[in-house]
Amino acid sequence: MSEWSVQVSEHVLPNGLKVLIAPIHHAPVVSVWAFYRVGSRHEQIGITGISHWVEHMLFKGTPKFPKGQIARLIQKHGGVLNGHTTYDHTAYFETLPKENWLIALDIEADRMTNALFDPQETELERGVILSELEMYENHPEHRLFTEVLATAFQVHPYRNPIIGWRSDLERMTRDDLYDYYRRFYAPNNAFLVLSGDITPEEALPEVEKRFGELQPSQGAKVPEVKEPPQRSERRVRVKGHGELPLLAMVFHAPTYQGTRDEGRGTSDGSEQLIPYALHILADVLGHGRTSRLYRKLVETKKALSIWVGNSIHKEAALFTVFVTLTDQASLPEVEDIVWSELQQLTERPPEQDELERVVHMEQADFLRSLDGATERAYHVGAYEVLGDWKLLNAYLPNLQKVTPDLLVEAAKQIFTETNRTVGWFEPVR
Image (cartoon, rainbow, N blue to C red; front, top):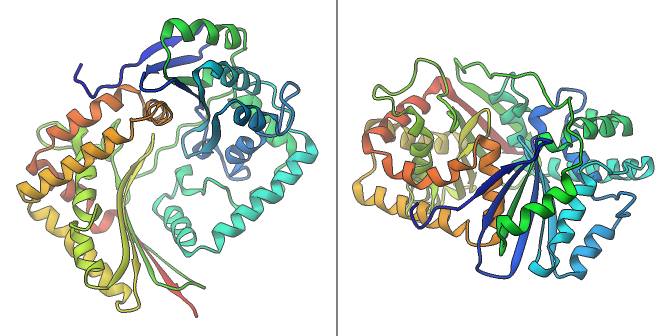
């Protein structure tokens, strides 16, 4: 293996719990992550936001660890903890000094099956989440992206916000939450990632001792949903209170697991590299002060900021351009500039020096993201959710395989009028 590769030891317990161990002996710490293969894409209308709400409830106590004790215990022993919910997964972590790392295993094994979902705490958390939603609704960026995603995806649950729709959050019950928890929180729908100053020989017996007797669930499957190909441009205009206009332009793109549309692969079979080509194009357009859109929009005072990214999820991906305008430019003008830059990439690839610069930046950012135990464990888990943790070690080699011709091919496939969804936010003062 090359020197940058992450070494991972993979094991599966009889009850289906996968354990991924990624040693990194830079410091005497251990990070424990519990990933559950459940996120907002597993929800249907009526219970949107339930994955996120369940995540909150797992911090509200079990008989063994009453409310507040988990945080106090981790802090007392010099650690940090948190949790998050995405479209594809829910995850919890604790990072502790090595001498205390077994506390994390105790916590995660316990709350995999014993979370209380106290009715009073559930109601209190409803108020917390509705307040969080209200805060988001007051941000123009959130409002615009909510509308754009609900327009770009017509069928797939990725169209629903992770926090959920207000009407669902107001009506869901404690029993809805608990039933969902019992359905998806089980060893055969979860995996652990352990990273830090630890070896498989040390870790596995401790994991087996705590998780080995937990029972698998039979109810974690959900119907498979496939977003149909987009056949025409879609547009959305949002008006509301805000300081500056916003532009969002998104394009459906392929995931790491396959092409976006059957019959539209590259002629030489290199379509599996299209996602990596799009990562490079995103950097060409929007990474740093030398990027094309920064020079065209920020340096000319037409925009306050730009962001370009190729966001890949398990079942779909979106290439996104997001611009915060100044009051010295109009939305149609900035949209035309963005579209012109995208179309240039369909005609000719970046110059060699520009290409080398962005690939070096991407490599540096990627390697930095694996520096610490917490970060390394997260990235191993995130790629496992996308399909296989080995995709992590394939990232840089695949980036290096992208040719100038493939960059043009990727741009031609993705940056089309029929594949774009455009959103405007227009401030009302």
